Length: 298
Image 1 (cartoon, one colour):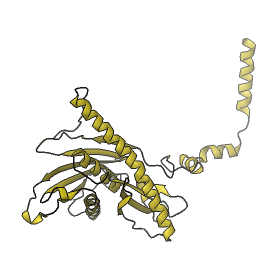
Image 2 (cartoon, one colour):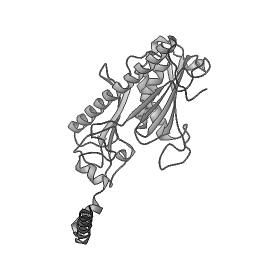
Image 3 (cartoon, one colour):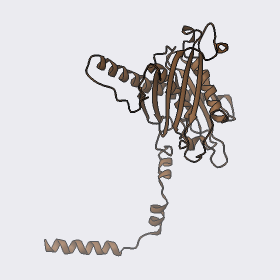
Image 4 (spheres, helix red, strand yellow):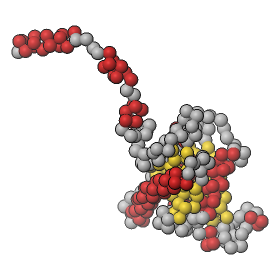
């Protein structure tokens, strides 16, 4: 035992005395996490190009009462967190707003001051151009999904609060509003799902699905291609698609749109599983075998 110990000490001293190659130093210090991800054909957050962000869904986080919300949903897509609530159908505030053959949808979107990672300014939802644009697109998508003819001369109010913004807030708002309508019992043609696709850094080599905030922003002066898409997966109908970037040809647009539709189908599977889980909990409560956790109350 003493001999083996002294032999081990000699070997250790010999290894310590060996000179370290300069290339070993450089390689050990220069390889970063982003380089390893690039060599593995992975994105900065470790996802594959066709992989969506991790989603967490909670239906009915706000307790529904007769005078408050009819349905609610909390959706997390990566680091983006959105809370949506639905009220109605109810009477219109003004008779001039009533439509004799269908209901109207009022959409309001607010962002908390701590939602974006960099900009901490308090935004006014009535004057902020980006929030107004998102509310208009969300309204058009919901109007193409909800069966409005069942509620003539009435109003459905949808309120969305962006709690954290790491990119894709329009897609997260659409998914949260769709689940809130399901929780409120509002009939729809199909479950509305949304996801984005595009190219990051001005290159069109690899199509990315479900872009985050860093991928949506320009990189090195090259604008990123970002195309949010909302569709009814079981019908195969696109209800919303917008791209503000310039694409080189029509084939590129088809590739990006197909990738966004594949992302919507992946989101649909997650939303459908969340609805089934929520329905099973409600059935268990009716049978006296369980309960629903409600972290928020109103």
